[in-house]
Structures are given as structure tokens and as C-alpha cells.
Image (cartoon, rainbow, N blue to C red; front, side):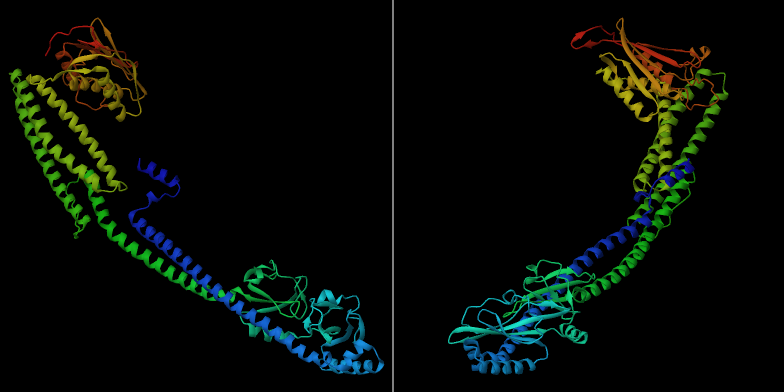
Length: 626
């Protein structure tokens, strides 16, 4: 049986109930710590992460605003330089009169202006309609380029300087800077400088170091179609440009996550974009998370070890209790539990030891009384000359022994019930206690039968007469036996609704005895049939099984006291159940009989005279009995 249970548990998947207490406590502590640490770590990490992102966003906003102002100042500085052209009288005269002398002076001024900056690849002088008058430098840069599409429109007669959009020409990047030329409140022309973007990677790296956090600087046209890192054209940011007016997060094509923000440069058609690596801001949050994880693992290990030590302290006395309970279940009542502690387990051990002492004492008293009564019985039975006196002594012995046995039996049952409540169901000793308890119940039933026999023989069997619903009684008895006999199906084929006058408890005892016998002596069958009906003013109750059956030679003696059919001790019992049932039926004015064939089962029937009613109409009158 134990091997089958063990094999069954091996086939089952993991279940928490299969863990011992010593395993459960560290497991639960580990789960609790993991939950708390994970929740705390994650919430704290999110908080630190959001704070770091907020700091990074604030820094980025400040940085991009300052860069926008710096480049605005560069354009203003260029405007001051351009005044060396736009304020010259000869230049204005040339734009208004086109005379040769003014032209030569204008060309000289433009050449001087061009030489001041090596990045000026082309310097142009345009009339008021922005048509070219003078080109100094590589004039191939500007043909086909609409200067109006590169610069912002401005009101006529207002002096201004504006940087235009970037263009790509033969692999190089250029941008125009246009300054208006006014005369007497009218715009008479424009000075345009086409500047080439020339920078080195070393310069870009220096600028990146100034930005910090692996920052990168990009320029783009305000239409968002062209972007450059000042070394080469680059892809546009992978987000909507409107989102970059604030702070946006996105991933660059190389997989790097960045924080980015963009501003327009006043006085130009440029956009300046700054990207800062998110990893640099999250470094603190990641470091915090790493330390929290290390601390959490340490706490989980420490908590698990502590839980294991605590559970060991609890389970050690439980193992001792289990071992002692197993010894008692095997019949050794000398085992005691030595636990020196004052908690609940200590109190349980103390109660267990008291129970063991009392059970051992009760066992010894019971054995002594059984020996004494046995000697008395043997002495009484030696005098075969006085059979009547022997019968009387035997009845007295049964009565005294039954009463004496019930007292220690009640004490033992109480202590077994206490032990079952105190011992955990997972311990093996719990099953032993259950087996022992069932044996005690069986012993109690046998003692009850002995007492009934004693009362019958002495004429002291009492009957409490009352009116009761016989159908209800029958169904209650069937349900009671069905609960303890799940392998058999008790079928009520027919029932009569009768108000019967008699002793309800004793009639129920008869029905339960017959049902118990039907189940007991039909181990290979699965069904017992029950039938009640009225015949000639008498109630007939038949209980039929499909068991081993009874030979005809035994039928006449079957209801005698202590008579048992010899079946090589296959079935337990004292042979009193049918005797008691027969006496109860007789005292109610009825009879009981059996019909059976070996191998064909048996049908026990008893009939009772009744005073009945179906609804409110009486059907028969029963004579007063008992």
C-alpha cells in the first residue's frame, strides 16, 4: 500500500502540498523577499530613471537654447562684417547708376571682403530684383539656385542679414548669407556670400566633449529635408520635428537611444539639433539597480537560510511526535516525547505524553480485567452440572465486561481524537491514528452488541415507543450505510409511506445490521436491493444482496446467539447482530426470516404489524406490544 502511494506521488507534478514544513517555510520566505525586493527595486529604479531623464531633459533644453543664441550671435557678427560692403557709397552708386567707375570700386570692395574669410567660395552682388551684377569666386555654385527659396523674405527698405538653407554641390555643403543694401529707405541690392562648410573630425570631437554625455550636434534646413553633422549629410531624425521643439526620445539608426531637442536659429533658415546619449543619464539609475539586485540576492539567501533554521527548529519536535505516534499505532505504549520548550509544541508534547501514560494505564487495566473476567468465566464454565447458573454468570460477565470496557475505550477515543487534531495530516502517523480510531469504533460496536445481548437475556432491554415516518427512517439508514460502503450501491426499489408506532432507534438498528451484513457478505458484488410494502396489514421489509449466499443447513440456526457460519474466518464478527435484530423484531410482534442459495446471495425479510396512515386515512390497527 505504501509503495502504491509513493509511486502515485512520484507520477504527480510538483504540488506545494507535497512539500514538508521544513521546505515550505524557507520557500515562502524566499518568495516573500523576492516579491518585496523586486517591487521595491523596480519602483525605485523607475523613480531614479525618471529623475535622471528629467535632469537630462532640463540640461538638454538649456544647452540647445544657448547654442541657438550662440549661432544667432555669429550671424550678427557676420552682419557687422558685411557692413563693409553694404554701407559703401560707391556700392550704392553702382547699384543705382551702373557707371564704370563705381563698378571698379565695387569690385575692389567685394574682393577685399572675400579675402577676409577663406570659407567664402563665392561673393555676389545682386540688384533689387536679385539678378546677378558681380560674381567673385566659383560662380558655378549659384546658377540654378533660387536665392528666394534659401532665405527668408523681408520687408523692403529694411537692412538685414540672414543665413540661408544648406545646399549640396559636388559633394560639398554650402550655405548663403545675404545682406540687404538700402539707399534713402529703399532696397537697391543684395550682397550674397556663399560659404563652404569646412570642418575636421577633431573639431567635431572637441565640440562633442564640450556638449558632454556623448552629445552630438546637427544642423538642418527649416523644411527638414536636409541634415548634416558638419562633416557629411546625415539622415533626418526618426521623429516628427514638432516633437523636437520639446525633448524627445528615440533610437538612432546605429541603435543608440538618445534624448534630443531642436531649435531654430533666429536670423537664419537653420535648425540646430542636439542629441545626448540616454545611457549617460541612466548610468546612475542602472548602477542603483545593480546594487539593489546584489543587496536583494544577499537578503534572499540570508532569509532562506534563516527560514530553514527556523523550520528545522519547528519540525524537529514534530518528527519526534510523529515517531512516538507511529509507535503507539503499532502497539508500543511506552514511547514518550522529550521536548524541552514552553511554546505550543511543548504543550502538545506534554499532552501527548499524558495521553500515552493514560492509554498505557488503560491498556494494562483492560488486560488485567480481561484476565480476571476470563478466569471467572473459566471457573464458571467448569461447573457443567449447573447449566442455568453458568448461563447467568456468562450474562453477568458480558454485562460487567461491556460496561468496564466502555470506560477506558471512551478515554482512548478521546485521546486519539486529540492526537488527530494536533498532528498534521501529512505525517504518516496521522494515517495510523485513523486506522486505530476505526478499530476503536469497531470495538465499540462489538461492546454495544454485547450489552444488547446482556439486556435481552436479563429482560432489561428498554423500548421507547413513538410514532415516526418509516420511509424517512429507512432512507436515513440507507444513507448512513452508503457513506461507509462506497463500493456498493444501495437501491431502494419500493417504499411505503407509513407512520409506524414503535422504537425508532431499535428498528433502525435492525435495518442497519441487515444492510451491513448484505454489504459484508457480498464483497464481489456492487449492489444491494431494499424493498418495503404493505401486505395484509403488515409491513414487509426485504434486503437482498448478491453475495456468497448461505447453505440451507445453516438457515435455521442463523438467528441464534453467537452462531456464525464457518467461512474459514473470512469475515469478522461475534454472531450477535442477527440475534439482536431477531429479538427486536419479536418484541415488536413481528417475525424475521431468510431465503438463500450458496453463490446466489441472500434475502432477509422481516414483517411488523402496523397501525399506519397514508395521508390521514388509517389502514390498519396494531395491537399493543412490548
